[in-house]
Image (cartoon, rainbow, N blue to C red):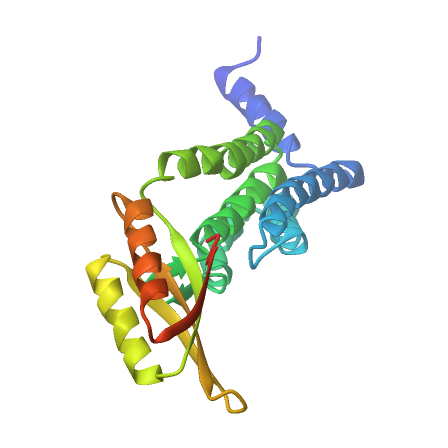
Length: 249
């Protein structure tokens, strides 16, 4: 009759044997994380974000490789009585990947861009760690949830915010640059809009100036306020021409 201690030792041996990885196990995990990174990165690249397919693939593969290495180190050195923590290296990945994500965040006037891409890089690294640990279901289901968040919920967000947000790019041609800049400022204050990224160029041959800027009409009745801003700017006698284009964030 086996004793309780013998049974516990056998169970522990069985659990530890799961950490033995063959070349095919390692290949399968790395290929799975490459697929996850490519899927998420392609969506980011399709929407012209700063980090695309290759960046997400490299992050996922690197995180997976770290987790696999952690398991191999544990298996290798346990024979000498050492008990290294298999989760220690992966914890550093989750913390350190924030620096890479921070590189995708940009500030343009009052607007912050790249937060979603930074979050996707961090999430891909976490999925890479999960797959590297052999938890394929977590990685694949997590990747599916990320795609739903990035694609489906983006459309839902745009639908909900359709009448509450509008960012437009303007190009104005005028003769009196000082007056027109002051006019733009006054109209923006009246329309409760934020003007950013203002650029001025002079056409010396015609004696005119070209002003390019972005106006953010946030909040309620964005469409009405934008229309009044555009109408007042166009009808001013000092303004030669005005063009307006909707800008995607």
